[in-house]
Amino acid sequence: MERALERMGVFSLLINIGLVAIKLALAALSGSLALAASATDSAVDVFASVAVLVGLVISKRKTKTFPFGLYKVENLVSVVIAILIWVAGYEIAKEALASTTSSVRVEWWVLAGTSLTVILPLLWSVYELRVGRETNSPSLKAEARHYQTDVLSSLIVFASVGASALGFRVDRLGALLVLPFIAKSGWDLLVDGMKVLLDASLDQATLQEVREIIDSFPDVTRVDSVVGRNSGRYRFLQADIELRTSDLEKAHRLSERLEQAIKEGVPNVERVVIHYEPRVKTSLTYGIPLQEPAGAISGHLGKASYFALVEVSTEQGNVLHQETIANPHREQEKQKGIQVAEMLVDHGVDILLLKEDLEGKGPSYVLADAEVQTRITRADTLSEALREILGQSTSPAIAM
Image (cartoon, rainbow, N blue to C red; front, top):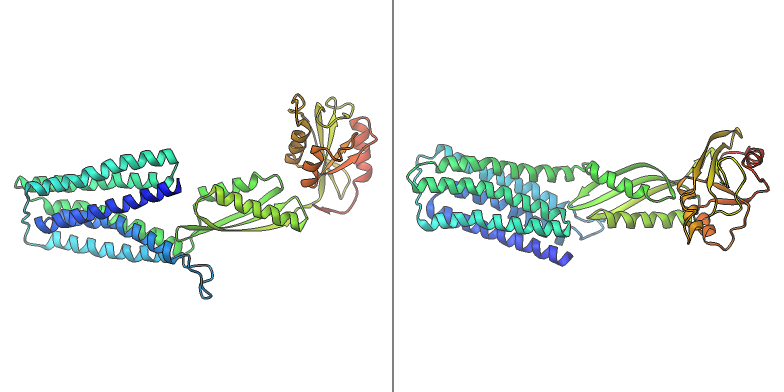
């Protein structure tokens, strides 16, 4: 798929070059300012595509002076191109407003060539939009819509040339009508380039997407911040998070998994820096399997009808919060214990009171990986278990 998308990019560049060549040739042969303005507008796309290629070649070169690469070269080129485009637009505007000559030589082949500059991008935009939807490529869909904008400016030029062929002197007006398109193209290039050069933040939608990926990991207890910036087309991200684990080796492995998940879920991410800290808890959440909401303790983890979740302060030794949840996995034929263990981890259970020993069983590995302690209890009912918990809970704050 990647190669197919790259080929689409190459074809798009060739089409843009062809459009610029056709418009420049027609402008030179006919003397049409409107065609010259339209050629300048189309040249923006060529320059932008060339800037991308230049950026790909140069930006990844890393040296002692530039250890993070030269990714911003692409954006610097974009800013320079934007200024050059505005200079060209200014010259066209000056010619349209100040020139005393307005003769345009329109032959049938000028009209035919101008109509080609409308038809060609229109057909390509339809095809590119279809491929973009099939491949779910945001860049292809965006470029297809940009081509449709070019079709609009080309229609203005075609109307201007057609009117000139009928003897109406509207070529200067056609050139002036195209100038806003030139100004907007230059402005877009300038803004995008300067935002990157000044290290502006990534858009909120991207940052939210990254936050959701991080939140999907059960071992992440809190996401303090997610920030990012562009450098060239690439994205650099930094996240400050709190983890359930205090094991540095496990935390490092988790951060590597997070980085990989972010790079797979968000396009053009070059580097992800994860700052993690262990969770400092002033309370512990106990999980207790029950046969009924406030009754006997279940002797089997997976077959328990309910679970009591009891949050206890480690400083005061009192119950901060208590709730009972139903077991949605008790009717499953296979791996119900593993599913229940994962559910309890998602609910933030720190200590699980059990009547059975889980050693060597599937749920024990899930719980151990999430650093959930398991304890064998002598209590037979929830009230007895609560007395047992409160008798053991007064201790200094525990780092988890």
